[in-house]
Length: 270
Length: 221
Image (cartoon, rainbow over all chains, first blue to last red; front, side, top):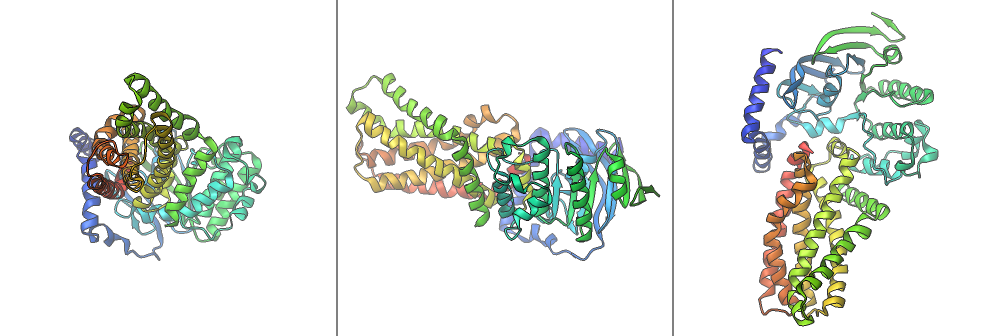
């Protein structure tokens, strides 16, 4: 384990003993109420930046285990990056870091010009994360789920039926999620991500649980996202499926990027 | 405000479909009223004098179940993560969740009020005071409950730890609400409106703390 990762583990252990981390966070929020500038100065950022993602020496701990152990990564806007690696390599944690969900112990991470630690809300509002959990409410219909997430993320203007049509789920709009198959839930979850019109798509095993038609839909959405000027990061074990779409391939192992290569979309590995 | 209403509407819609509060929490609250009546083995006049305390104890216990239900709706579908990803401010998420709990609590209190009238033959000497105190106490319970519910999720032992965390915090609300109801139901000669003022203060303080702290505690949920 690199030295700085070890230091982060020790630091975290010390903090956990006296519960100071939660207190520090609470204190930061209380301070931000009294002195809003302390948290808001980072919000003024350059939205025209060429880099969609810039991660330097990122250490993320899961308990005491460094899921990311000093990871470096830079992604240009408008690219499709396949993140590959064995189970436990840190792929999902990397996506969660880029979504502003995984706390950074050390290092830095900028997403779409925003610091993931200081401007979490801006980062989260700009990304779309498709994770293994569908995050749908079983008792609601698909349409109600979409309507809720659209309202909450302030995308009320989105045509929900069109979004469902794109994932071939328009006919199931009024069906409760509890009655859907795994693949249908997955398609509905993809529609929820799509209505947010994210500038950075973070797809964790997007083809899992989908039939051939569903997989084609995912590929079409990735292509559509790129056409719209977004950036896409796909963590997947289905390399044959994603490689033809990817402009770059990052190989992650042990919580760091072992290699980062350009790839020719269409299947020729550069 | 649309984020707040979206969250509240979603929680109420889920309750309307699942009917957990209507078919489990509400009967539980009524059973508490009946059990207290049987356990105290008291005549109607004694029960009437105990009514304010029994009412609020039953409301608190039922409220804890309603709060646990409100939290489990999010944990079952890993939706706390999606709520964070929505980019909505923490205080709006808090307000939406707390408002849904408060509306469900008010429905429970309404049925409990009918229960004490029927079972204990209680009278509403000052209905305005009773309604005002109930509103203030409900906001305080829903605010503290929504915050502590998420806090308990972060600790990973929500079902067992929530009452331990929440009941001590809500004890002052229980005392003040009981005193206000003492006056409102005409069981004891106290100044109910001053207790009602204290309840209002609790509602404001718990609401403000919840609005500020929710963004922090939801990070660990």
